[in-house]
Image (cartoon, rainbow, N blue to C red):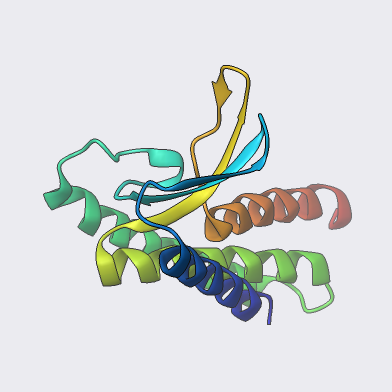
Length: 149
């Protein structure tokens, strides 16, 4: 269920961005801190490999995503049913991985739009799938270290 909700949130926000923004259009949400900016990222999370040769980057990232999907599925199978937090976090990670894989397979790029900055510091733009993967991994690690001794 967590994976399905994450994929839905990712797809719906990306569809909204494409329908309501032009590529590179930016809208200030919280002045000096956050804006929505429609970007296409042909690289990995946070723009890693975006400057690389497109001919090898896309297939490489698709393979990495598929490997991650199998790894997440394996972890979900071996995680005990009573480890709810671990299982939910794996679902959120899975949903994020599916969301970005969908973009990469369909259009060769991932839609990014969450754009945070503060004074001269700027975090690379990202999307709901990236946030889900990041938060899911953090929660899964914490749950394994703290809750499942």
